[in-house]
Image 1 (tube, one colour):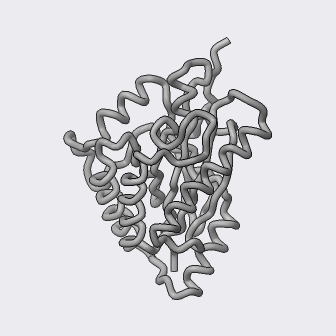
Image 2 (cartoon, helix red, strand yellow):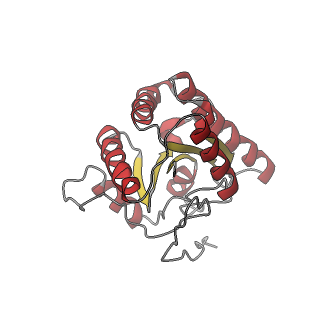
Length: 229
């Protein structure tokens, strides 16, 4: 029987330091305008047409995100407030879209949060947690942007398809998240900015009954949450 997706809420209410899941629309946010020449526009539309939904959003929860934000403010990382938050994320989103164009990585905006969806077929081999060498340049570009825009908490979440046991998939997804976080740390990203979480097979964005759907579900998501003052 073909797997059906859970019903997603159509709106998400954002409050200060919210770390709950933000599941809004399937369309990518493109900042000030939905430019027709947006490099990710065509690919995102193709994915949605194939039945692939939005990214899962934050998984670590509000408490973990808030604690990390307080630690960064205490360490001297200035927080953002009011309209400065949206403008800051607009600039970071535009830079990420420019650098991720043509890489297979989707950039999705949900409120003030930005998520990079990195499919497993370009980051890891099947059933592997070692980053594929050809993906290093992409992560290098991500790291350079995160260094430039350092007023964010970074959640790295690993996901799998539904092949295998729950326990195995959870461990595999955590190893993948740890591998990406470890690589970013080796490129100068402060480890205290990062939270890693393994979601296993609990957050599919596509139909696990097809090869294409399973490939889409084997992924890592990097979500950038602004540090609020």
